[in-house]
Amino acid sequence: MVIFISIFIVITGLQNSAMADSIPALTNVKSAIAVDANSGQILYETKEDEVYPVASMSKLLTSYILLDKINHHELSWNTKVKPTKVEAEISHNSELTNVPLDSTHSYTIKELYQAMLVGSANAAAMVIARAVSGSQTDFVKLMRVTAKNMGIKDAKLYSANGLPTEYLKSEKYPGASKNSENELSAQDMAIIATKLIKDYPEILNTTKLQNVQFNDRGKTTSVTNTNKLLSDNNFQVDGLKTGTSDAAGECITATTSKYGSRIITVIIGANSDFQRFEQTKLLLNNISNSYNYTVIGAGQSVPNINNVKILKGKQKTLPIAMRRTTGLWLNKEQGTQDISAKFHPNSEIIAPIKKYQTVGKVTLTVDGSYGFLNGKDGMTTSVSANKTIDKANIIVRLWRDITRTN
Image (cartoon, rainbow, N blue to C red; front, side, top):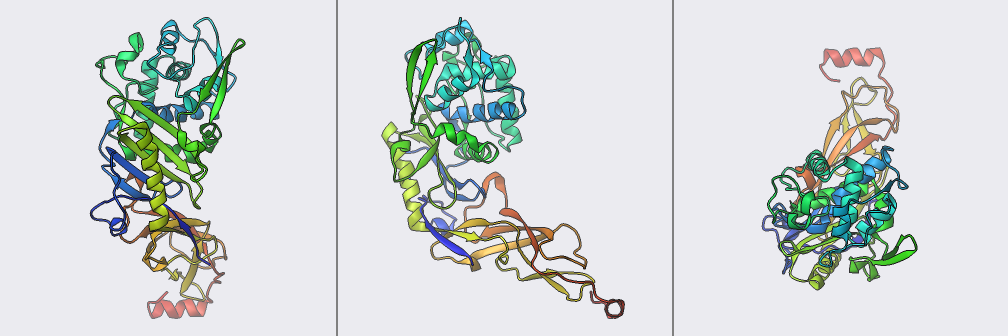
């Protein structure tokens, strides 16, 4: 059975999308996007591909690189790192979010990681960057390569923490002006967040924490999460990261799995701390008024594809089914008839074929939708044979050859 789970996603006006016609536009933001983390389906977008400063949301890319290094055993959570004098000085700058660091003390990667994600500690991000790459410059180069590998082509990256260059002192990226700071689009941030949650979902165990204690040789600093949505039980947000600077305005990349599938929202350039959270709530609330999340279970028929061609079989066609459970968001006026499917066989399908045998993939799209991240045509997933088809006997096959049928 195809299961419809009512869900909420606010979406604001994009001119050419039938799905967006009934959705109110966000206000008081420079750009925004909402996507499904599993499929990459875009649920809302406005100026999503325009590049803006993103401030501390940059730390999500830094987190991805760190988690990748830990996953490949190049670093461990217990690795200890001593800050440089410059990093320690930056950690005591009262204009910036930080935990205080001492250049004569060592800190574990885990301590620095928690401080960076929960409290948006800027110097902690720099210490992590140096632990990963040896220098701030080499880490920024790695950030650029990593972003490019994710399909992000328009990013401007200068630091591990997103601070304007003027705050980085001697650690600034070579050639960067004092006003240079990381710039990405809302779509870029959605790509990073999607990739991060897909590859390293354990990040949510940290980003959901409302506070942590940073201990330094008996001195404890209480660190409060900058994401105020965590305390609003109506939305069950469990991440990811805020960002604030004069050029960026108030930003947030948020995520929740309350509504049947994990949703990622990005707000760039809200005009106040209050508005970045209110606009995120609006975006989520309107989702429930505009969409249904439609689940297609493993073993269920592929929407609008009943059978595919099979060669040399007792039957000429083979019914196919979804190999794993998946889902798409549909406008509440839509149904599965509005899902288009394109079949991509692994090769020619030749009998005999066993039930449940993987025979190819399908790309699913929703009529009139915004599309998918990275410019993809749709969500691609594996499909399998939904019936065993034995090979036809030699006489049948010869007759088909004579009559030029399969």
